[in-house]
Image 1: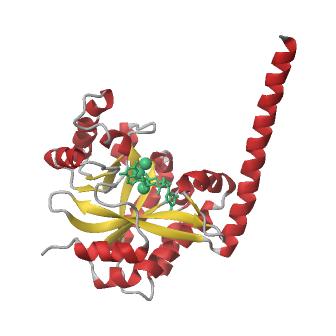
Image 2 (image 1 turned 135 degrees about the horizontal axis):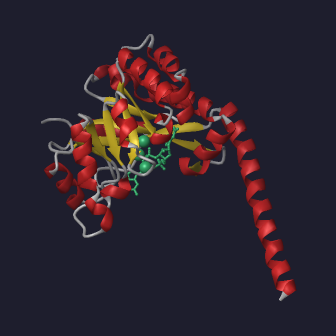
Image 3 (image 1 turned 180 degrees about the vertical axis):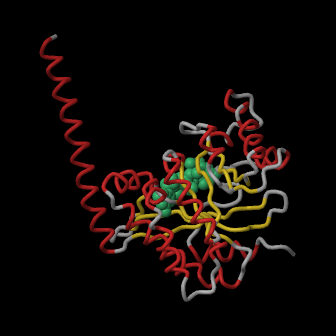
Length: 277
Ligand code: C2E
Ligand code: CA
Ligand code: CA
Ligand code: CA
């Protein structure tokens, strides 16, 4: 019995060591990837639910390794945040968006692109200068660049308010992302001058079904309306969900039902195909 305990303990220690080594090596690889600018951006269409028209896209980062392998953000964003590399990744995303869609954005003023910011980007506010610099010399308007961050970015209300105020003064819209999954204090939400709220896909997945969380979704929608926020629903995979959301007055949505995230050229084609007749 004792030796079994020892064996299990040894296995556990081995696992912990393996996981932390793996993280360390990923962190090292990530630093190199930042230096080599190995990040690309995919664009998931955002649809006006009532009309089916495409009004914009969410920029979603991917890490393309030299061998062509694509790493998804869930793997590397947490490590990038921990190590401080996220700032450089945010900068590269902004630069890529302008490079990929600058022409399209300048040609069509009703199109917007939403960029995901990390908590540290909201806290420091430095990212706003990076965006201004990227916009300078293009015809793209600041109004066309939307910013998203999760609740973690807005917890420190003082710094968050300062960044949101400045972003809005410049013309950007600001959305709270993944709403309902974090601590969700309604108080701070009320105190922040936000423009939009993104309903997390975990709440969209259950709408119209008889699950416990499906009863939360209408409350989130009501609350967003009370606070006068635009609503974007994410993770729409089925017609039933899109129908429910339209019926409940949700303006915008995204999800596989409409399109997966697309490479820039494919997004441009999707966008043109999904305009008013
Ligand atoms: P998010 O901001 O909530 O982005 C939505 C995620 O849901 C994306 O995953 C998207 O591909 C996925 N998704 C879209 N439609 C559907 C659907 O119908 N069903 C399902 N099951 N999933 C759907 P992705 O691209 O893997 O990104 C994961 C997360 O990584 C993002 O969640 C965001 O928090 C973070 N992230 C992505 N790009 C960036 C970035 O440029 N900067 C930062 N700081 N974070 C990013
Ligand atoms: Ca997002
Ligand atoms: Ca989200
Ligand atoms: Ca999410």
